[in-house]
Image 1: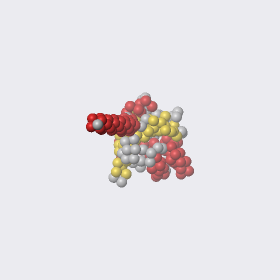
Image 2: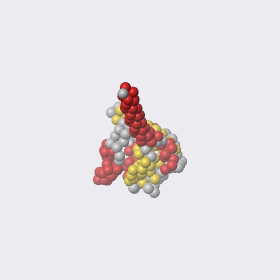
Image 3: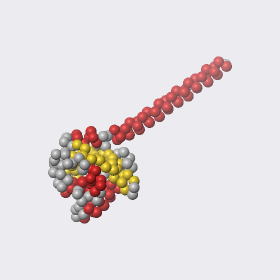
Image 4: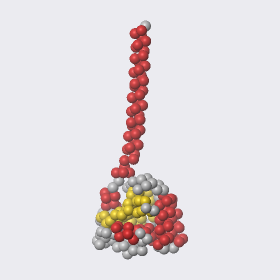
Length: 202
């Protein structure tokens, strides 16, 4: 009888141990799955991605945008040094890559773009509002370390990517001049940042 009790106790211990191992394995797979999903966003490198979209593009310069003393994003300009013209932004293909330091909503990005376009007087108010409505529905929310890459190509207009994945486009040269002009136009409201981006354009 005693032997039967000991055998039963041993069997219950084995079942509990097996259940624990199964639960541990499921938890480990879940954690690995989360890590796997997060990985690609941080693996994105604009130095690899942009030349696939603009073969002649080379890094011209880099800068960090600050607001109220806090870093908002790091930005890089990719151009063909032999043909890029800040006076005629729609002449050749180029790209701007923004790496966000902190999370930012798509709505927040669209709001900032509208404000900066208005401050520069870069287009008529109704046109800026129309572009704003388009961007407000187009732009995704961004996590810390996410990249938003804007690529201009004369034949396609402005295409947007998040961590290398396309999510929309805005056609037309007028939008490209207004949008990229925020950072690249000689009348930019952030001249220090513009100067850093343009270092390799001469």
